[in-house]
Length: 216
Image 1 (spheres, rainbow, N blue to C red):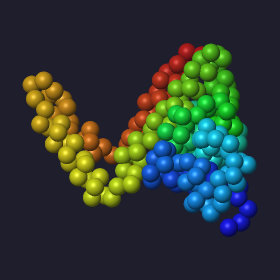
Image 2: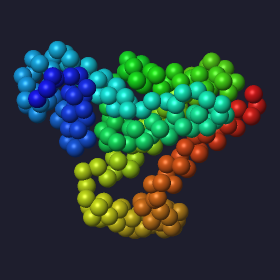
Image 3: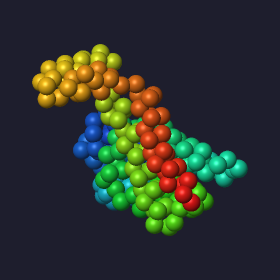
Image 4: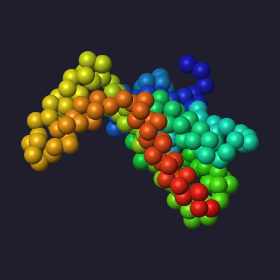
């Protein structure tokens, strides 16, 4: 193989994390997969903590916020959130990776966060409000991106359908006098439209932000 790079190591680590979980991501396993000695990997990542940081940085590297333009801040912030969701969704292990690292040490995450902070300040929010809003927005994007891929990762369509069927039957078998709404809505709860899940989830987040902004 060519020259071993930190990016190549992180990409292979994400592939393992996606299919086997983060516990399977070890220096020894990566060395075997990449055809090198463990010492070759230590030049780039001295331990699992550094490796996870590299994985987090690499999975966000494919997302670059659009340059400033004349559109309203709401549209640009929505672009940022939706773009981040699409990027994170390419890796089923993304949420687990980001939850296990200090996000303030991940350069590409910091770039997205800084951009979001600037848009909030442009909208007229105070510094404390901007800090809180961006934390909620970015964590919401991570959660929204995770849901479909977390559920379907590593499963065939038939396996997904069977899991959904069993979950639906489980909800429908609940005592209707105690859980009337869960029983009634068992199908949509389990088999929801993921496209609507994305757009509605982002809409919910932005409805609150825009409602706050109207008072500015």
